[in-house]
Image 1 (cartoon, rainbow, N blue to C red):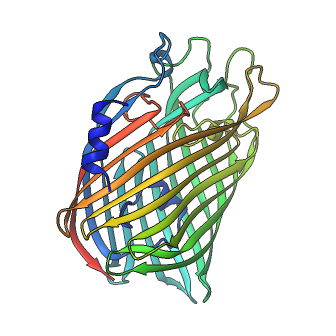
Image 2 (image 1 turned 60 degrees about the vertical axis):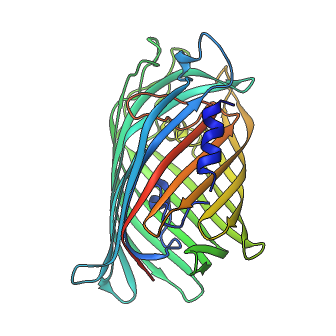
Image 3 (image 1 turned 45 degrees about the vertical axis):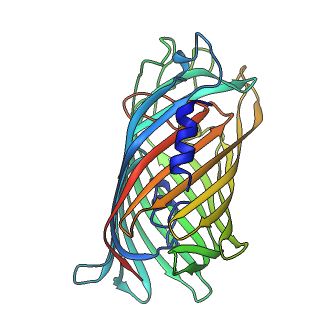
Length: 390
């Protein structure tokens, strides 16, 4: 572990606030726990990575010791416009999101939701594992853009169901890591229908603005059609996408109170999709494969009124093709880390985290090239403007 990694743990050592949205949080949850009815959040800092092994081919696979700038912007207003709908917007390294929710447009207790989201800086990793090393069949870059229109209704017991159509446009391009013998997918359009089933039963700690107990479980199903027509892959494993695919994924936030100062948190996500749905299976921002899971067990501990530290254990599961391409292998990966906030005031905080995972498939720390490592660390400042508590 580098000295800088230890410095990040020491200075930033603090569980994320409920206002710490990510792109995937906004796309996958419908009614997440929110302490603020309105907020404008700006975060900026530096992110870094270090690799475990020392090999001549590490850089050719995207494994480097490197630093980059990082940040995000999040906006929420639950009283937007004359209709008093909810407007949300987000911009970060992981994607761009804008959404508007209106409970009066259709009426009859139906919630109408308009969403536009994009991931302009995607990295795809078509490969296999050999002794925990991710060996490349073909690594390349891409982007996708989506619009979604949903209609949902809630029940008294916290159950919410939403259904709607979406349209996606996907583009791909070669990168410095792409083998000359690898054929990347063609650009294509896709459309489909998506259903959300979400159960929310969360009790908030209003003094601290954090979930105290309960859970949010979201299950998502998709049926998608596309117009992709050409084969892609290595010369020995060229395949085309089927004209239609199915997908299912789930997300869990579970909060278990331990004491007034400690709360156990279980954050999990997972997916299972058509085995021939190769493009989605090789998205590099999550575990690879047509079956995957990502789980963190966290212990949020409040040290006084301003300092919160959350150590966590991390487990990932992937089912990916083997080297010969004729079968699949199941791989487990383990890691540890710590996340923290130091609240200097209601509007200003320091945010830091460190994470180790023995999976070489980790999110890139840069948007212009695929750079990653088993060790990741971050240190930044968070500013909140116009924050209004519920």
